[in-house]
Length: 451
Image (cartoon, rainbow, N blue to C red; front, top):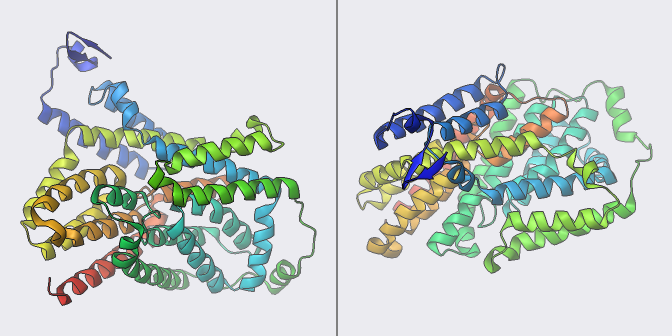
């Protein structure tokens, strides 16, 4: 595919098929639906293969050129994932997660409900001040170790970690990428999110954990930690843990610097992906490990899945699907902020459950910025509705947020593959209820303030 005479050549045009923009739009939507269908049929097609097939089709059919496809990949996300995977791998090799798991087991006393609540709350708190991908990369291995030693089924506990990371990340400017986008476009700061979003995200977090408790109890996932002998052995185990203190100190030091740069880096132009890539590379320099040793543990299938999905979603963005959706929402709002809260919030939640919320948030933020020119500060509630919808909606499906896919691949690596439908058994009801309650409370507060 190349440029010739000012026109882009591709397979279809070389065959004499010059498709109209409307036809390309239909093709882009059809390819997204087909890719999503293949992801649903995970028993027959691995989701990474499905995403790559969709990406190839987008380029072969000329919806995007290879250059445009490459540009549609969010390398900030890819670098963040790659860098944090390497840091977490070094922490794992040092024995850090085994140490944390043993202490966590003592704190929870082996009670499944305590395991659920303690790890979910910790995940939500960490996700509010870090990005949620970093949090789940850190928490998921610990959860797997703890529940496996207690004889519990890991899957629902890992799903609980995913849900808590997405709800907790909603609370602050740095917790989830859509919030970073909104903060940048709307000129909102950390304190603005704490005041206008954090209260509703906090309610959603505790409500979500409570709903997971009820769902897990109904399905027997909180029935107990196996036989008493196994539990007693797990709680009284004094076997020395094999650790590498020097490597652990190095990894924890780099991890602490990385977290600090996550918090202070964005205002000075250091994106999270660049920070993670730089600090993880420095860790490889000082640690007594070869890149080959570390790279063998990188979740390459996760990275390639995201790259393929970014290209498929980039095709939708390129033909104007997101702009059309955003414009339609603008027509529905028609200057009514109360209606806008519900329209923007729920539409963002639904769309974010099925496509990456980053390009949609960028498109919708552009529309809201235009509204801000005419409505001024009066339309600020729409920014917060967009944040709540886009972030909380990530819990709807397994591909709704980056954290979901990362935990899914960690689970598969540990021998506990997470099915698309199985995730929806827990995630979808929790997402629907938390989104409805959070947006309902936000709308109610808006009305009470005389909006």
